[in-house]
Image 1 (cartoon, rainbow, N blue to C red):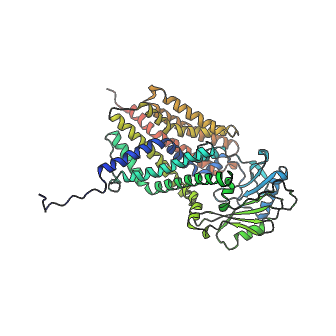
Image 2 (tube, helix red, strand yellow):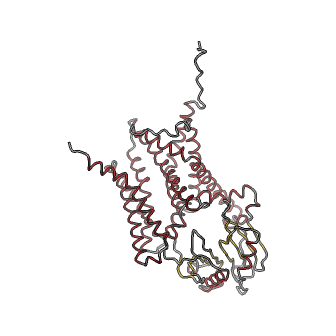
Length: 509
């Protein structure tokens, strides 16, 4: 008989069986995509700072604060003079900004010799070839793992959807998520400490993790869907499939005579900025310059919203051919324009970038501890998986080491494949060590120490090379990145330094 004076026990929202089933699915999904998610989150944490890395790669590039329309025209004309005029399909000028004080000229033609980008001086003359091999490598690794476009994009897209499912299932598998938000058990079993760390980081960063997971899944599905549409409707032409969002291209004029004059950019800039106060000119481009069908594009930057970029396209007579007009588009199309800056943190300056980088590393920590919890649980139950433990240690600390090694060869050579070779060397070496059974207890520590040494060595070597060229000519951002590398090396090595000190100070028996 029920005691009427005893308070009724509240029935839990989810039964234990249901929670166990969700947790099992959460674990299985994590095991399937853990390595890919970890690598994508790790590279994404670095790609947030891609502008800073580009300045770090070429610290002696000429600094330009602002340029006039006349200087833009001089630069675009100089690009056309560098190669056969009829071979140039498009030229563009990216104007300097506070985040990137460089004037960059780019040309695209039928041959690689006359294609590429150059830093220009204050007069608009190209003076240095742009070489962002490390930055481009990291971006490619994050977007498609440097696999063929169809394969790499699908894998990354599936990993994004898996990440979203992991975040949601992690919430559902933890009914006490709010109550346990500040519960951190330390000093007990390793599995409980890891589980608490995994859950607390996941809880504290939950809004960010949801945004990252959603935008990653959205971008993955969008690119997969767009690739399918391009393959079936546009004969595989991704540019044509994007034309509704970015504007049409000047097609059919590749072999046409280039006898028409290229109109000055001042009138087009004035027309594009008229009626849009607060917008700044970001780029000027010309498709099929000198041809009858040439078109002039003006890229505008809007710092007041998430869709940061507007595009306007004109014909050579000044008639408006296309305008992105993001604010006038449907909500779904506005979301497409906003997803990329929201995903990478390119909308709020340095503080937002720093927050994105740290929170991205927290996602790496969640992924690392999630698999470690599963491995520790197996060991506690008498079913250890030593090979998987070594492979996971090679992933967790082998990838930061490999990414650092990807940057080192770029200091000595301009070969485009140097970053890929450095990364592949580090990755293969880490997994080769994981195949050695006696490395079970020390693999993670050795790889962690090697990562700290590589980070510090990269920073010191880069700073020494910059100092040798003259301190006054070096971009201050280069010193900031070197300092960040040294600080990261310190935090990577700090737990080992504490352990070493404790070992040395321990009293002998």
